[in-house]
Image (cartoon, rainbow, N blue to C red; front, top):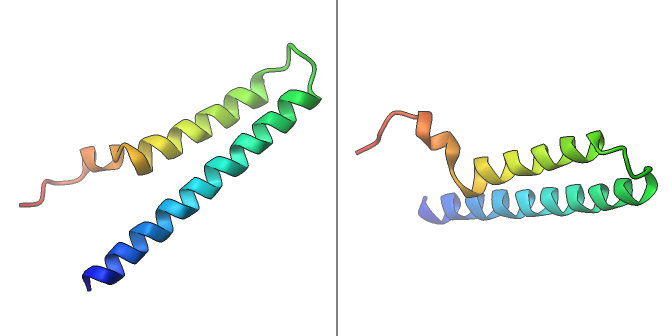
Length: 69
């Protein structure tokens, strides 16, 4: 049971890591292709990355869950 839970968490962490890497590469490609003043797509990607970090690495979702003893 515990090993299964650990494997699930590890898999989720790897998925988030891959997601952040893909968003970072996309962010770089967009910044290289767009003119200097076009920052809206970069802001959207930065917010998506911040959301992933807050949810999975900073555990912000746990703030709204009932406390477990």
